[in-house]
Amino acid sequence: MVGSRGFPQGLLLTLSGDGEIDRTGVFYHKIYKIFPPTEKIENINDQYWTLRAEEIPEEEKNTAPDDRLIHVYHFMKDTSQNQVQNFGEPFFLVIHDGETLSDIKLRIQKKLQVAEEEFTKWKFAFVSLGRPEYLADSDVVSARFQRRDVYGAWEQYLGLEHADNAPKRSYTVNQNRHTFEKPVRIYN
Image (cartoon, rainbow, N blue to C red):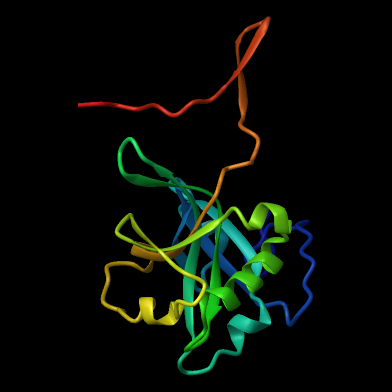
C-alpha cells in the first residue's frame, strides 16, 4: 500500500534536513531521470530502471547562480574496447565557479567516506560521450561543464576511476561449486 507522499506505507526514512526527497531513475549505474515531487511512485514505470529516493543535501538546495549540479559516476576503463564501464551508485555534486579538482576531491572523499589510502589511487576525469579526459588537481572543473546543449546530462559527467570493490553476486553452477559473474565480451 502506498502512503500519501507516494512512498510505500511502513517505509522508514530518516531525514536530517527539511525532508525534501529527490527521486531518480538509475539505469546501468547512470542517473537517467529525475522525477518531479508530484509524481506518485505507483505511476512510475520501473521496468527499465531502479527507482532511488534520497534526501536532497542542503548544498544542492542553496546554490549560487554560477554553481552547477553535475552527475558523478564510478567507472573502470576497459582497455580492450577503449570504453568506460560504469558501476556503483551514481550521485549529484554541486560544483562552484572557479573550484579546482583538488577542492572537489576533498568533498567527494568526505561524502563517500573513502579511506585516504584507497582514495589516493583514484583518478578523476571529465567524461563526455564515453571518452574520459583526465583532470589534474589544479584544473577548474566548472570550465569543463559549460555546455548545456548536450543530449541528456548523463552524456557529460565527472568520472571516478577506481577498482570496483563491491562483492560480486554468486550463483550456483552445481551443488559443489560456486563461481562469480563475469562480463561477456563479444569480438567482431
